[in-house]
Length: 340
Image 1 (cartoon, helix red, strand yellow):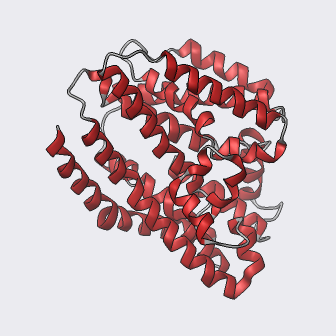
Image 2 (cartoon, rainbow, N blue to C red):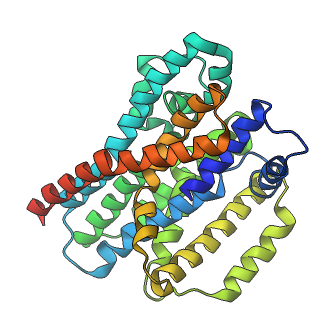
């Protein structure tokens, strides 16, 4: 899924730069992918898959197994999992943005979606408060626009911790469900009547992503097994609404994708033979996602061909994973064991 995002964004930026013409097969691929998956600028399916997978893995390995669950250990592991790479990629992104603005400001602004960077907006990005406040959405672009989706995941981790904490205290979840449900409904109505917030809803909304995340969590339960009929129904529902711009229909399409992804994840979890090479690629997926925009935009600005740029992104991402992300993640695991 990380590579899917890398290729899709690479094709989009290459097209914008005028390096793909209508005679190119890649141009037709790019147009087809946009019409099928993002006809109205909605969430990229691979991002939906990321969120579903995140919910699936957290619940699969966490509270549902009935094992001892330490909130302190959980908080440490999740923090070390997502925040260091997020901060690194954001800081590097800011540095590259300033360097790029000195070279070709208009092009950098167009490719990054950022016309200026301020300390206040950058702190908004780092904290992730834009996940709840749509007017701050553009601040979450600063330094690294694709990471606007990643920080929402951090808040979903927090939300899961709150749910488990209440379960551990034998307290009901009714209040939590009501709070989330009201927040989702208010956010959706706000977006329905204010098109300026549609981008936030698709790419940075805690409430929108929360639904997709909990689909993954629910499918991780043992009594939820892959159902071919449900996949077929989901596909049939999606076909007539692929190119619709109505937000309600778009949301139904996204939910359909999430259900399909959840089935595929469950199937892979139970029936797919493990491959250490696939596992390495999967583990490095976050670094690929976090770094791809920074590296690829910089390379494209220097006229590096897209296929070379993709290879370089993959190499640098693997280096980041093994030399930075993995050591910090392992340290977080060791630290978390003190609270088990």
